[in-house]
Amino acid sequence: MDQYENPAAVAADPGANVTDLLVERVRKAPDQPLFAVPENGGWRDITAAEFLTQVKAVAKGLIAAGIEPGDKIGLMCHTRYEWTLIDFATWFAGAVLVPIYETSSPAQVQWNLSDSGATAIIVETADHFARFDEIHADLPLVTRVWQVDLGDLDKLAATGGAVSDDEVERRRNLAQGSDLATLIYTSGTMGRPKGCVLTHSNFVELSRNAAVSMADVLAPGSSTLLFVTTAHVYARFISVLSVYSGVKVGHESNTKNLLPALGSFKPTFLLAVPRVFEKVYNSSEQKAEAGGKGKIFRAAAAVAVQHSEALDAGHVPLGLKLRFAVLDRLVLSKLRAALGGRVKYAVSGSAPLGHHLGHFYRSLGVKILEGYGLTETTAPATVNVPEQFKIGTVGPPLPGVAVKLAGDGEILIKGVNVFAGYWNNPEATAEVMDGEWFKTGDIGTLDDDGFLTITGRKKEIIVTAGGKNVAPAVLEDPIRANPVVGQVVVVGDQRPFISALITLDSEMLPVWLNNNGQDATMSLTEAAVNPAVLAEIQRAVDTANALVSRAESIRKFVVLTDEFTEDSGHLTPKMSIKRNVILKDYAAVVDGIYSAAPATEGQSLVF
Image 1: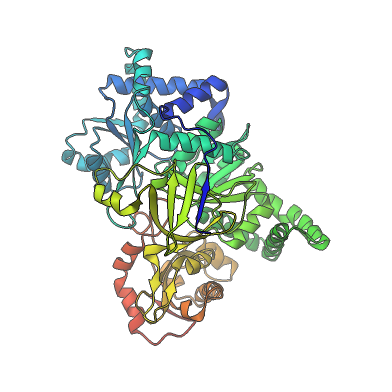
Image 2: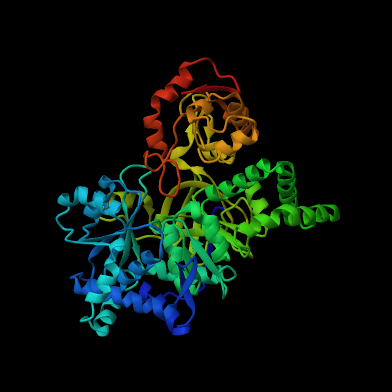
């Protein structure tokens, strides 16, 4: 199959804008908790009506401060309740929000604000303000600056008293569906970020259709704890969808506090990237190892995977049922409790989850619904849903969305979620559009049921000197699942064989070292040449190599003594590698691989 279209489940309303979703929610259930905020060690609910009141108050403050309809306002803030409050207040004031990642450098802040033509910015912390202040002189249009941690939202609300309800109502109704709702800048993995023009209809129609498709996930009483950055379209869309669907949302931006927050908030579904699920699994395994229960944990994991695979096959043998029941009670139930005890679903995107983890979590009682999308598609284009669920795929198109494969396998998307183009960049827009179809740059396959499988990124396909095409993700994903591995970058374009750059995971490494009789205090530099660590990495590489032909297999790997991070410029905020930046910065290392001894499987080089 090379094309699959899922008809819209809800009739389009070209006159609707995002504010209508909140107004509709308040009309349906004004007293329903829509958010919860940390308070006195617990959580305090905020009802839909209370949220709307606060939104209008901040919107009045923005209007009183001189914000005009269509004005662009930058926002640099961690994932927290105030992010969504500001988002809706901006829409109610008739303005447009320009999210800025909280990790952005001054140069990145300057680009987003200058390219968008922003006239104001809201920052969260003193550090955020300092980064903005460094380049403020180069941004003459930005004349208003507010800081959340200084109580400026309360001050805005206090100064807006003279603005009438009628004026707010007039402002919020100005935008039609086709009008600009937000400018979200791409993460810049392939060069300077481009501003994606997302319309009100993108959010409204996608929310209304996704709510039908994801009805079980968004059922009455559902809740989620957001920790993915809301500056990214992924969490931003889920926030809007939750407002529309009546899902209670909490926030925890510090992942070090995630497990305690999950335990107290007790969400019914989660939103995360595969790296989070890998970390939870690996840390649980290493904790069990440290307690002398590593063998039983691995046995439980193996049986969990077998159990899930048997469910897919349509029959679970009695012996497997009994083994699973015992190990579930002894081991898996504790992991469920660590996630809060109520999680039934998790929505995962940005990279493949992998067969093992998909089946493991499914037997844990958590269906991980893998999905696929980009900023240009307002996040989801396809997603597995509880009734249509195939591990290893990213699901079928959402209602109102169509997927088509080009002759070379490139994935094209059309539908209610496709953006209106790149801001002030018609040339870049023309490059990615084929009529109504958006050319994603990713390649994949469609099965007979319309389920999409991602096989690689078109621009990342490696062609060896021997003419062999290699998709890096097939090798990188299973290696990165190993507890000692941080990130992996497969290399070998126009080279005689495939190699890899590998970093160590500084969080998991000490635990692994301790569990394996090594000095847990050794540095990354020492660990990079440690025989036990190298043997463990070789084991991970061997596992990945077993999935491909010899011509596609990794013949050498380099263990780096530093890490790829956002701060180093090598990772995006959603933890995707910036492949072109890494290849440029480590060009000498890559050259060294191929100028050294001939390829021998299992050989490693350390830099």
